[in-house]
Image (tube, rainbow, N blue to C red; front, top):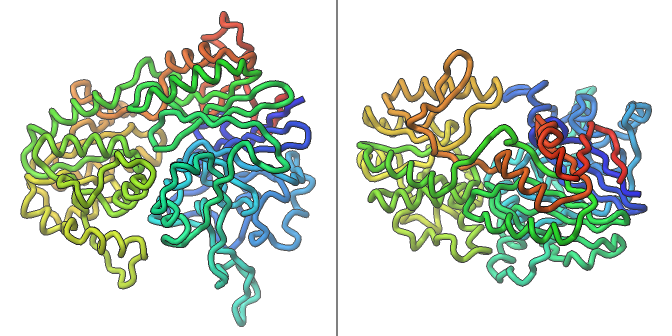
Length: 528
């Protein structure tokens, strides 16, 4: 009997944590950061206390009460005594691994708290993207996916209360296992093993997982971040297939098509399928995004700012083509350059920044005397590509700046000409916090007299993109009809919806399919 216990991803977008147990074998399908739960309690200036170790996260229900799976450096000696009588407490030993579908934090972020000896299975691209994001990001206490600095309880002299602080013993690596050793060049291994905060990569093959003895299948799929995959696990009850996040309208749609065919051949006992966009009737494709963005930028006068999701390499390349075709240069941020450089180690078709005339790197205004090593290397390696605020200001017709809302504080230095264009190529706000950010964004645009295109506007409490400005964002998730097609073509015996606020969609629309729909409940177990 196979058991599936859902510790996250139930009636929420993201936060997936699904425990699969088959006799003595135990695997987690993703171990994500639950953004919606965090927003119930925390915001930018109110966060879980790093100095309290695991305590805040366990008390507030942001981590499941599963003893023995978390980092021991974050536990006090008696931490678990207060949770052992909790309703969903469990002592969980001998986890065989985490099957990670992609590097978005809502699927990977809480890997940060797991013991470093629990292996993470992913594609090589997901591992490299995760490391690039961590190297070039803030690396908050709860987002250290690839490596972490151990913490130790320390009491300052004269203080009665101790706190968990970073120790001086250096970083600890997390064990990533990938199936594609053959694609790793010497440069790729150098990035992983001897680059910034070097970590050795374990390229253990999926058919050689030691005592776990699992038969796993890794299916590449199309999503809004490189390296996404679905997983197949052969169990004593038959194959269990887990979709992760996917779409059928992106540049790599053929990957998802191939996954559907291969998964159908397994005649799966169960399919765990995402349902983010079940309400959407259709999706915009990436070529459509290009066409609409080109029209907007081609008629623009002055500076152009392009706002699109972080780590969406396909979208960045779309705007690179727009820049070429409108005789502009695409000014990317250093973290984008670092990600492109990392991606090129695995995918040679990714543009070489040094050779691509249409790419420059915008140097952000900073007061730091000791910038991070990765940042110094980017500026040193591509010194001839660096542009400053004064360059963008004096040559505004020449650039498309890749700025998000969080980069708008550069505008006082740039002083864009009135009438310059802000192209919004992302999704509308989904919660109150994002709505507040959108209101601020509108204030920024008004202050600098920027013309917005594709930006949602507030009407009677709802946020909508003007009809004539739509078509600038290709979602990372399949629409409702495409999700039904995925289910019908794979044709599992059982379908279990996750990563969806409206899982009943599958019950309502697959009644005649012969597929048994089981709606999961958080912390509860489904036996198959």
